Image 1 (cartoon, rainbow over the protein chains, first blue to last red):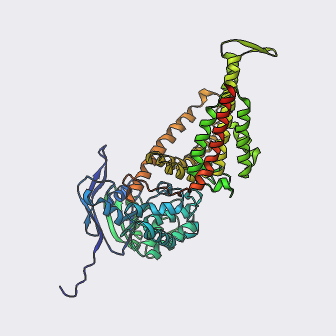
Image 2: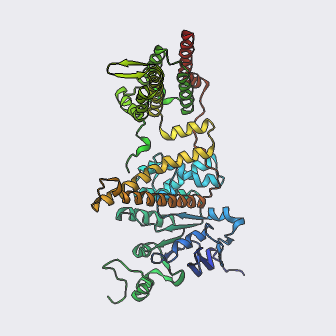
Image 3: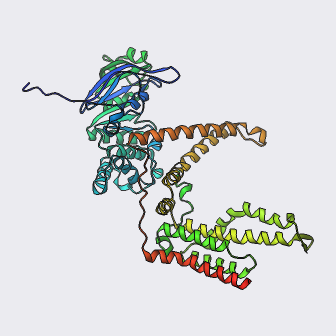
Length: 252
Length: 255
């Protein structure tokens, strides 16, 4: 097989199905894969199953049919620790993620759990804070930061674990336009494999060349973001909507 | 949400008392309070001596005495009970002006008032010279079980978040013209409290999920803190030592 380059799959979700204890299906036979370095948006209206999907990626939820592989490693009990290191989730509300007295301690929490100590730990914390431009506020309490700063610190806490796939749950929610742009700049600069769950369509267009549309727990479309967003019927069918005044449809 | 409650007792400074490691201060406070409580109530001068120790300490730390005095009012609800004692206690009575008070009750009230005030005063000096995260580090150093340390950490972290949420709910109620004057109109407040409880519970779950996602396996990282030198321990223990001398002297004077 000389000359062939096998691009490793960073993330592979196959036939994932999940029902909540009350019987409602949150995910039905969801399959897609993400190659290393790709940035993919998972689009869907509220209740489409996006957050449920995210919690499957690092095994917080599971037990239904189907599989998730991260860099070839199956997400299951035996590999849980490594899977959680490989998948870094930035949750929607930074207050859920940041709980230590100072920013530094919070960023150190993850890598310390994964066994990093001493000088190496300090270096990781510093590198992660540098990547999100937050070194100057390292000794502050997360309580005293603005919304945009908290979001970036939450990202740093995950970056410090050296994940292979970064997953964002509604990264732009509650951010003002400036904080939103600053976060986008940080994300583009990071140049990582990213999965972004959102219903903020312009943000998906800006950051992710490819999108997967989820509706009622099913994958209903998977393709270049610009093409998907230029299809008003597709969007309307799955309760997605571009902000007022936006149109990507050709010929307008 | 600004600075929040968790820090408003702390008065930053660089005095000797600010710099001494928190574990020494906490141990010193506990021993000091023991000495105060163990002193006989009949020896008024002993309480003068304890109070003087506190004032000297607060002055040495550069704490504004007036601010401390105002903070002392936190003990009022507890002291109210002490003022009732002379009138409800039994035993021989004597007349003070127009009212008759129980002698035992008077002693009891004095006992609670004096020991309570000095205890609260000493705690105020500690909290004014030690930040909350430092206090937690000190308690961890003193081998407080890690589960309790974790609970304290979370309480400090989320008290402000929940207070802010409560404030937002209150403002939202007020904005819709809700202004209860009587207890039976407080239904909406009760509902808000219930909602707040459920939301906090759910937040707890989300925090836990976020922690698990970063590899949390039941052990919290150490809060850090510094090792105290022998000199610092000796300096911190000078206060309870002095108090113990006063206590011993007051017992000798009594017999």
